[in-house]
Length: 367
Image (cartoon, rainbow, N blue to C red; front, side, top):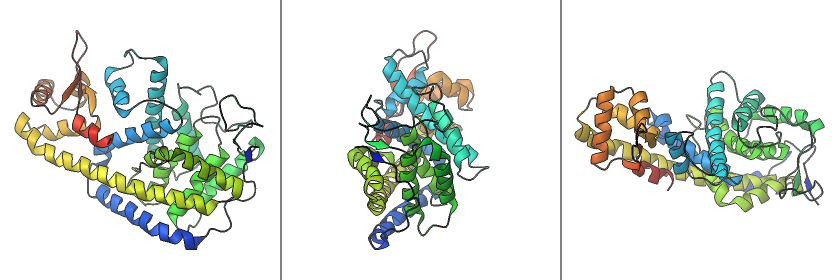
């Protein structure tokens, strides 16, 4: 029998803080250490942008997409004319939409607190032009949905979210909980994430949007200096437990158990994120003198910043968008290729420019 949404018990009246407190400390310290790394770098948003793409890949993979960060970046570099299977193209477009939706929310949060308006707009961007785009992007569902194997009936479902008649009230309560006083913000975030997934307010895209809310909330509450937290790797690696813990909240009221799982995910990923961020920043510092020596150009930093922000790219795009004079940009690319800094993904042919890759950065990002 399907598990039903937990009517009347959000927010939970009691949590077992004796069990939670030992887990809160390590998670909070790991997040603080990671934020310290971010705060020490002026251009962290730019240098760590490949991690946003990797988060989009992993969050989408939890929902069944089959693509890699390299494939996504190659698609961007080669353009929509790249020949590939329709399913692969659809997977890549979903990942690109995730990234667009994330940055849409970030821009809106410059003017607004985290709220339902941002959630709906992020969902509209997430679903634009991809599988599920016919399912009312940006609008809460007006019919009952359920979660289970493909094609199952509601009786065969694993979980039945809140009814459409009570969804607006449920989302209003969820939004209010974002801004209510919190004993601990990471625990509050755990509660908000599981509640959003249980409400399942849209016909599609709820899982990805719920995970996107993790870094947005962290930035909103100043746990991080920016919305640069990448939690999906842990959820993807523990997918069965992730879904079971979510389900147990409605099935058995196990809010504390879910919070403990979430706090461990945050601790683990904060440490992983910090290691990756440090490795990327170290690579950047190492490449400065090397690229300066190779190119002997005043545009070294501009070139490096462009390559770090997009580690697989089309040569002509680099020349047009790097802000470097055309002849100098061409020379820089030739020198970096000849010295092995950049690898060739696709050789130039006719009017098509070569596609190049900064493999050292990709290796760090994809582990």
